[in-house]
Length: 328
Image 1 (tube, rainbow, N blue to C red):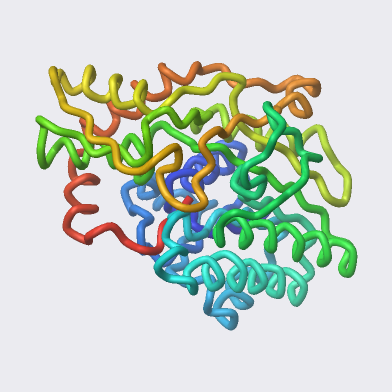
Image 2 (cartoon, rainbow, N blue to C red; image 1 turned 30 degrees about the vertical axis):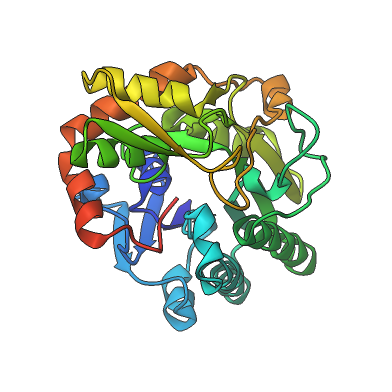
């Protein structure tokens, strides 16, 4: 197939591109490089099945032109700064809602019938059921979650109107090679500035599930192969979870730092809208035959080893003062 990947130079998007190229599909990467990295995709530049378009998902005219002739869209581009909407209420609306509507419009105009969408565990807000199943009540506690749920709803409507098939994945936090934002990244960045103290948002007891990126990509393609309803919705996470203090301990251990003082800021939530416990029920995919192969601690250590070898990513984030717009 000819596949179109928004945010294809980002963390998860670039791994999806790797898989598509490996499987001999034609791939168009569409990225504005606000946080995407050329080094994540440049190994494909000489491949006849690869094309790069520098563009923004808010540019509908270019999006329509660029998707012409494609058969499937992987919509990975988004604002991934969950707490950013507190200070800038336009981020999630523009980057997650308007952008997704633009992608769907381009698909409608060009007759594209398949879409993979990166949603989030945040759509569950603060659920009362753990592990949290796909049919759990969705009560929004953040603009980010609301924007992702809005994207899901628009996709379902377009599927009904225009006979499109969709695969919607509610992600936990992904970790691994090419990781460019999140708790591990932030801890390393802070410790590179001051290796004696570490600020931790919340009380450190927040429990989160993390998924190694290559396991997650395997999960996406496994679902594509085994589920063929008009709308297919999946949790994509891990059966394990880990609290934030444990993540900090592993970071300090890998950096060979001892007696680091942890300074906690806030109560049981790191910020308004932060869920103190994220643990998704993955039995829907698990019963079909998929499960993650990498335990969370190993995934955290692999992420740290990658970032230790790619210190320029840390330096770039410091230099740009944490971009508001991020790629998943």
